[in-house]
Length: 562
Image 1: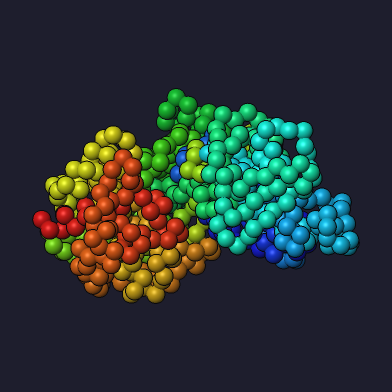
Image 2: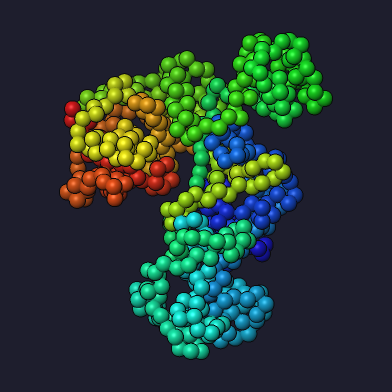
């Protein structure tokens, strides 16, 4: 890249872009390389930027480690300097003046062959700005240029032009015709766009080409939302594993010794602990911390840290978080530097046949890691960074506040919508299709809309975290931002008047500006939502952790009428 870098915030990299994404810049579209080819750690290793969150590492492929993206300030560079390499993509451009589709060449003194000569870097810059709007992609994550020459010559003729005439623009795709300047063969763009094509098996972010792929590819616009969807895993820092002793035991100087000594689930004696801390690189402060802690507590924490090496499913991790939140709200779990609940501020609010218990979470820490992406709703593609024996993933830690909601009594399981979701859940086995999860998810969206009126946050700034453990569910609505100061308390200040938020969210649940079309929608094998639309239930992608699926206003309404 040139020194005119395109700035991206770490949270943007995590939630919108990432390796394999196309970034629109002032110099044309650029494809973000994988970490291996980015040059990001040419100077310093990822260990210097590590984010420690064991609960999240258990959810990552290969028990991966997490790093935060270095900034220009970390490398003592000006903001105009680029620290992450990208490539110009797609490689084909369309000259609007001459109607020519051409392949860019960095060594040419022209953009398209009919453009006037100019300095090479200016010609290249012009050609990048004229990048064509279409790429070839498949559900397995492959991405490549559209093979324009081959598609204009479907009969495999020997004609190989260097440019293609492009006629028609500004209207529908069927109004665009591609024609070979040599043999005159032509095809309409709409015919190519709606047709399946051979996949070239290319991962341009890895600089890999020509792998075998059995999937069919299709032409997509480079800015399509389904062309790159990041796969992100998140975790809350919980009090059980958030102490100075936990951090000390996780150090590379102590953890291997503990793993060896606790291999047989043995109780360590005082002499054993002296051997644990006798390493040359263990500081006197850490030694004192460990040895002054009661031996039973040392053993418990050591077993917890060693047990963190075990893998955990996403459902198990969420169930653990739910149990921790419920325990903390009942004063049976201590607070920590990264997790604190205001148990004196807990309030209960009846609404219809239900009664909600709302707990203010005054301090929380959320760590997110991007493990890869999906294209065209296909299978996830892992994009970890191998460094030595470790597998690293980009991440970000954020701090903020939240509201934890639970029900004092479960909702009624009667009604047509509940039965329909029960059937869908039994067929798919997906936790997102469980009727209780759909119930909490729909409630979450309605509450976020209502909170945005009173809290000072926009609906896009309040996020949801859904929980389901057997037949017990819960919801955490939270707002976070990077940095240790967190947010300003706008959410937790609403607890005393949360009854008004509930009324705003639920009193008009039976009406929608799109009714009766919206309310008549029923869940089926072809539909991922029941009664839900942007007028009543859908949110921006920054707030919804399930991408606006598994929502049903009628399911929530049926339980309130009981």
